[in-house]
Length: 481
Image (tube, helix red, strand yellow):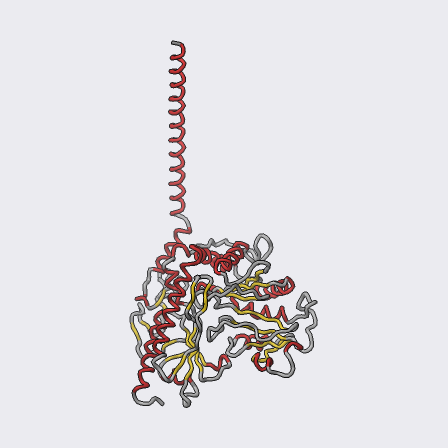
């Protein structure tokens, strides 16, 4: 009997405990939900909501699909604070909503604006958006007294590891305002004597000769001439040095290697070698959009740029991977004096963009980029294949370690050649057909070549195809003068 009473008592104790716990949990979740509601109500009235409404309002201006409106764009009346930005139209389109097409307009295939990636980011508006507080990173430096976001550096290293296009282990990283700033910083750092640790050291005599292989990116010469340094001088094409009786190995040489090359998309390695030859690898286009990735780049000094990775040329961000600590310190010193590092706002935006890129192992952006560029190259090649007047560069298939398969060509630019003897100026031939490219002589290759950009927006590319199709079709008609 006593045993049964003990059981009842224990049972009642358990029931009471359960009831008490239930009451406590209900009270807890009631107040948690209330606090959550209060937090949401507080957010709905905060500055971030107002900023989001403003940004989405401008993004909703469609511009007929042939232009964009921007928060910092033109407005109808600058004196009216309630005015919204107006549409900024693509080439050959106009009107208030960019719906008016001008058929006699020239197809713009000049420049390197990588707007082919714009649709990718429109589809990811939420995940790529950045809301920046007015007090964000007001200091010159980060908390570690550097000009480089350690989170961003971490994501860049992870990106290269996933793509497999560069070795980052044992490398230092320097950020620059686009790759353009880094190119000059690298030349200046390499042009000092090996035992020099700052820019006050006496340069070697004679100065370093800066070289590149034709056809090459003209900025290499333009920058060298602009800064007119006593430490280095641009001396032209590597082939003239390679074939010279006076070997380059006996002189101080800095060689630019662009791989894939701008303008022809070919993968290159250094032409010159020797103890006094210092290479700079410009890998702006070494991404799966534009080329197969046969192996990770492993040079002592390599330069990359955000513009050809994500398409955000306007953010002006690039980085360099550097093996030698002395060269790294010299480049950091250069960046400190020239710009106090890259804008903290730009670094924040780049970090956000790279997080989107790294999602799903980078497959989304590189599959989109490669599919778009491969499709454009095929369409262009099909038109030119019908011509006896024009030809394109040949880019052989290569195995890509990122996609794990053989890759056909998908270059950023078409390196078009006029084959007729009388067509000595290919730029003028295209200009007469309302096509604007970039002269081959800009790349020191002569005027029988023209570079055509394939990375602009879809409107520009479609118009380019239309104009080329018309030009090629004329070959079977009256002879073109």
